[in-house]
Length: 250
Ligand SMILES: Nc1ncnc2c1ncn2[C@@H]1O[C@H](COP(=O)(O)OP(=O)(O)OP(=O)(O)O)[C@@H](O)[C@H]1O
Ligand SMILES: [Mg+2]
Image (cartoon, rainbow, N blue to C red; front, top):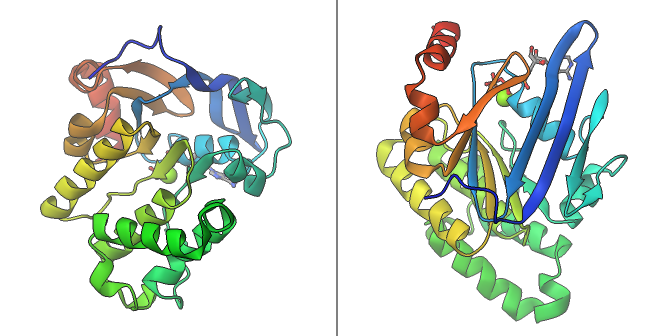
């Protein structure tokens, strides 16, 4: 575990970012770095601006002011599909799976957009799909339609899609919400394994058990402001932040 960022390459650099929706300041002067190989968790009460921050990174929303740099280059004006091509993949709170496609097809469609097929060929891509479905324990369900999966399986399918993306940075919006304890242990193990293989992860999470088990670093957002960042211990033990978090969610 590390909270030191000084010696690490900064993949994503957010500087003085603002987003207004009419009179509402959803993101308020946020400055944040995502260093390579570090698992950063974004926590904060409902409506804090967590999803909005993802949307600003991925080009789904345009900042009112401020900048986001990816690998040293500004993301200003870059469209969501281009952001994905540049190596930033995301999941959505509402999953957005292809509900009528099979499990396998849901993963394959991601690979078709990446370099897997034209670099390794169909066979290599199929092997990779098998590997991913094994890791997410979906192999036996590969021919089932996404719509027919159980809730936890749909969450793992969303993760399988991001695993197929070849992205360097994963932005995960509440990927473990509603998982049973056994599934979420599997989930934590899987993300840790990918982080070890060099994937940088930024995850929005409400389950504090997962936050503690998973995070190298926690960033706390409230009313659009980045109030604090540090180790999960520092952040979760801070009585002021706890009061905001639990007060607002009660
Ligand atoms: N497209 C939009 N238009 C107007 N207001 C928006 C829009 N998107 C988000 N908001 C508002 O911005 C604020 C931040 O919303 P956001 O979805 O980023 O919160 P969040 O931290 O992800 O919350 P949750 O934990 O409930 O998912 C909220 O007040 C929300 O209503
Ligand atoms: Mg959200």
